[in-house]
Length: 152
Figure 1: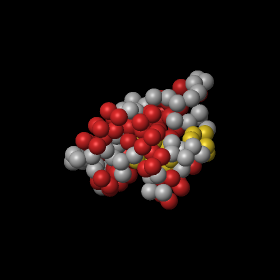
Figure 2: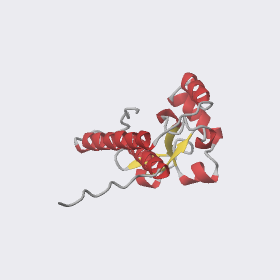
Figure 3: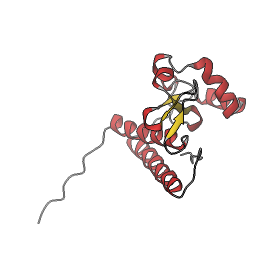
Figure 4: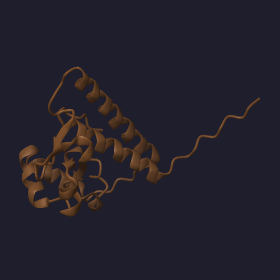
């Protein structure tokens, strides 16, 4: 009788990366027309795969906001990396898109700490992968424009 192969244990950092990649991918795709999306801070339009997902409140300022959908929006490399998030332009976008109340909630959440485990990250990754697939199905049915993502 053959022994069952052992499941390879996933490390926390690997699971976190999977969760972030799934969230980032769906944020950029959902905010596209299926091919192109615009940077929320400078407005440049590029293929959605060439954009990044930038945080309004930097992810280094609290892990409770790391995966908050309202905190994550499409940005070009220049705004996200070279301009450190381009906060001068990000804030007016957030006011228009989400309003002051969401900004206040994000600032409160920024002070919190969440103790994610491997299974938490894997569940986040699975959820946002499923959301990407749902949005892909809608696009294949002819749906255009921004499509709402269901938050985890």
